[in-house]
Every structure is written in C-alpha cells, then in structure tokens.
Amino acid sequence: MMKKLAWMAAIALMMVALVAAGPAAAKSLVLAVDDSPRMMNPHGDDSDAGLSYMANFFDGLLQRKGEAGKLTPALAVKWEHPDALSWKFYLRKGVKFHNDNPFTAADVKFSFERLGNPEVSEFLNTGKQIASIDVIDDYTVVFKTKEPIPWFANNMHQVFIMDKESTEARDPGDVMIKPIGTGAYKLEEWVKGSYVRLTANEDYWEGAPPIKNVEIRPITEASTRFAALASGKVEIVTGIPVELYEPVLKNPKLEVVSRPARRSIFLALGNKTGSPMADIRVRKAMYMAINEDEIIEKIMRGHAAPAAQIPDVPTVGYNPDLTRLPYDPAMAKKLLAEAGYPDGFTVTLTGPNDRYVQDEKICEAVAKYLAKIGIKVNLDVKPKSIFFPEVAEGTLEFYLIGWFDGTYDMGRTYFKLAHSRDADQGFGGLNGTNYSNAALDKLLESTAKIIDPDKRSQTLQRLNKMAMEDLIVWIPLHYQEDLYAIQKGKGIKFDPRPDRWMVFKEIDR
Image (cartoon, rainbow, N blue to C red; front, side, top):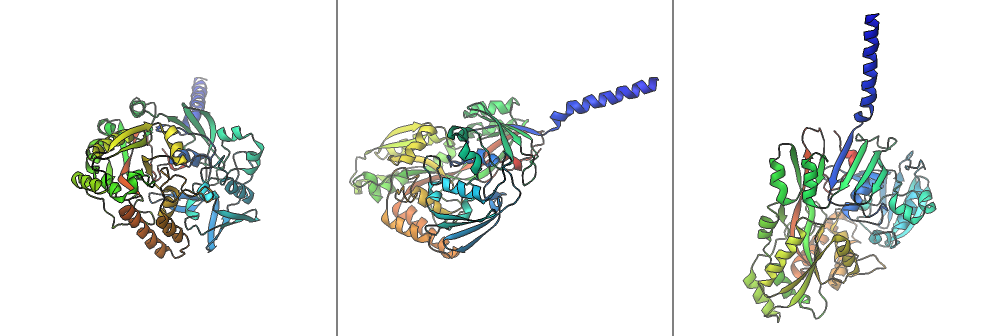
C-alpha cells in the first residue's frame, strides 16, 4: 500500500509539473524597439519601421531572406517577365488569411489597386504605374505597367497582400487598427504607445514559427530602452545609442549585435531659381564646409562609415568610382564669393530629432560648420511625426534625412527622392525640396526602358555620378551602423536583417 501511495503521489507531482510547464514551455520573446507603429494598414506607411511591424502580419508575393536580402518566393511560387511591361505571378495554393478566408488572385488584384489611392497608400510610385491587373485564374495574375519598371518584382516583398472580402466589409477605422493578413503572426492586442502583442499563426503556410508569443514595447527614448534591457524587462533592444555602446559592451549580462547599415544619412538641397542653392558653386561650398570625419568620430563615436553617394554597395547603380569632396572650408569660402555670396546667406535646415542615430546633433554640427563659412543656419528640428509630412509636401529648403532602397535599385531611389514632383505619375513623392532638373529627369526616365540589366546598371552609375558630382543633388554624410543588444544566456538566435526589419519567424531560442 505504501509503495502504491508513493507511486500515485509521484504521478500526481508529474501531472502538476506538466500542467505548470505547459504555458511556460511555449517560446516567448519580449523586446523593446525604437519606433511604434503608426497604423495597421500595410499600405499606409512605407517607412522601414512600419514595414517591420507589417512583415509579421502580412506577406508579399515575394520575400527577402539572409544577409544579402535574397529575393525568394512567398505568396507567389514563381514569376515571369515576358515583356517590358508585363509581370506574371503564379500564386501559392492552400494559403489562408487569419480569418480563414482563402488567399486567391482576387486579393492580389484588390491589394495592388489599393496602392494608387492616396487616402490609404504611401506606395503611389508603384500604384500609379500599374496600367492593368488581369486575373487569369484563382492562382495566376498578370500586371501590366504603363512604362517599364525594372524593379517591379524587387518591390514585391514590401507590398503586402490584404484580404479583399474583410477589408471591403469592415469600417476603414477598423482596417487601420486590426491587421488581417496571411503572415506568421496574428495581432493579439495593440495598446498605442505601450505594447503590441502577437501570437503565432499555427497554420502558417511556411510552417508554424518557433516563437509563439511576442510582446513588442516601443520605447523611443534610448536610455529608457537600455534600462529595460539591463533590468531584464526585455530580452532584445533595437537602436542602441552610440553613447551607450561601451556600457552595453562592458555589461556581462548583455551582448551587442552589430552590422553595417544600408541606410545613408544625407542633406537634401533645393534649387529654386534665384535662390543661392541654385548655383552649383554654393552647393559645392556647403558640401566642402562639412567635416564628415569629425562627425563620425565625435558624434557617431566611430559607428558609421563615410558616404560619397546615397545607394549602398549591393544596390543596382552604386558607383564605386565616386569619392567624397574633401573637407576644405577655405575653398568653400572662395566658391561662395565667386557665386556672389562673400558674406554668406541665411538658410533653414530642417530635420527630425527622433528618427536617426544622433540626428539632432548632426544637424547642430552642420549648422556650426556652415556658420564658419558665413552661412547662417536656422535650425528647425522636430519629431518625425511632423517632419515627414513636411517632406511629403515638398516645401522644405534644406533638410537632413536617411534612406535605403528596399528594392536594391537606385532607379527607384532617384524616382522617389530626386525626380521632379509629379503626383499623377507618382514621381518625387519624397523630394522634399521640390528639386527639379530636366536633364536628370530625362536620363532617369530612359533607364526604365533599358531591358538589358548590365546596360541599365551602367546607365544608372552614370546618372549617379552626374547627380553627385555635376549637380550635387544631395550632400552625402555617412552610412549608419545598426546596433542591437540581447540578454546573454537566454539562448536567443538572432541575425539582424539588412533592412532592419524585426521578422519574428526568423528568430528562435
């Protein structure tokens, strides 16, 4: 009897242990990020911060994987480019949205037609260029573009597919706060400014993700993010500030994960007729007045690399022959005098104070450098929520911004950031100074019609050289370094993506 009772007690203890271990056995993750979602409409925010959230709830026709950002199948299993204007996608069968609706070509057509609506989309550059979308059958769709778009497929990882039926049936306000996609995670709860909770989609077409529960805490203040990590309240933090790099590195409980960033930080200049910056000598003087090496050393604490152009190394159109203009304030003063501004002039420098690494301090440094050659700078730094709408309006004079192109194609970069603003064509949507140059526009437009990839790459390199040397469309500063920190001993397997998205199906522990 005693043996029987002992055995029953042991069984009972095991059952209690199993019950207790059930929820705890599910892998979970709590992290702090440096930006919060603006909305849950996947087409309404084309920033990398917004897309990072959406990539967990939604899928594109294609996706990017690995350190090189290789383009691979997702909701489309393969694609063809039969002629300059046509793109044919063969869709994956058996995929369901979070509400159990089947994914079909009708959802693809609906989602892409939505891109051209400025009330719900920031992807107008793509949406406005689509001439027609033909549904061949439930799993085949053909896009025809108005003009050749060589990077069309390259953009398919960040154009997310929505459920046509539920999106049309729901109130627009509900669509803005409740995502219904095919993604690896479902939204459990979103409390604005506090947290976003996700649960794994166990029926995900690529297989259930290893991390079952995720809590994202958006903490914009860097030292507060670090404190949350150091105290163990979160297990991963993004955007480690450069001034806290050494303390994090020295903390035995923490591990730093870093990678060179694709994002370049640069200054955009207007060229309004009659303004000082319409003169190339003035633009060159402003470029040569800025000591970028000192910015990297003192403001970025060495966590940046000097840039001579906006595109990064893997991007089509990156020109390896471009070099920075030398820092030479004496020559800068001489150029200003030659341009008719020996006593300088006054200009307003606009920029965000909560978007890029040390953004406000960089703006302050630029103002001081320009003051040394006689240019008085009125600083206008502000939260990104105010800054970016001003960029979109195209009314700024001179501003600091960061950029990397998710399509890995410089042509799209120039169409969005430097082409003369054209709302009907979707050109120049982020040309915040309303910069305009007919020769640049003409050469840029010609690249879209070049089918041969090598020839197009060479033409884009030539355009890049013209823009950076002959026109000085922008003043490049540096490429950032992406810095993350994780709790040691937690078994977290995390490799940062080149686009800086936090895609939780790629994280394990």
